[in-house]
Length: 148
Image (cartoon, rainbow, N blue to C red; front, side, top):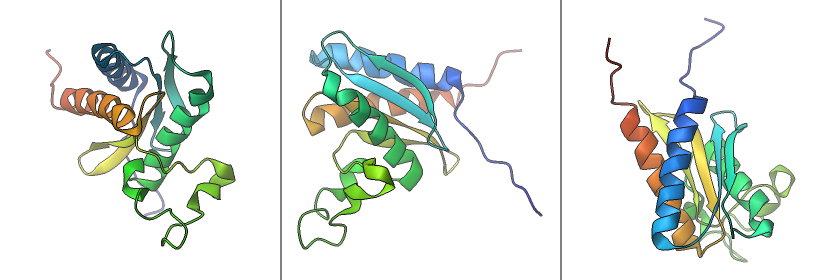
């Protein structure tokens, strides 16, 4: 076979993730830049909440890009990117877009990465917490069957 069918996150799915991440950001009182990409790393949705750092806009987008493209949370690189580490210098790959700071998490459906969310402005743990809320909300929506 020369082609295959893969699931892809929709704009509606991105909006579910974005809304949940925004709600969590408000709960912890840390305004965020929140980016949602599809499985090909293309931006589907973005929000810069009031008070989020301007310098974190691209960081949020690149966290989502890294999580979708590498199919792993950006937090997995923490112990490997220091001088002498097995992934030292990886942040210079992909035109400098490869993020190694927590806050980028893939969105998975039936074992396939369908997209990712990236959050930035807070501490890495806060960014990751907000991203996780978005992922959980959209992944939960995958189990909901449409009422006919």
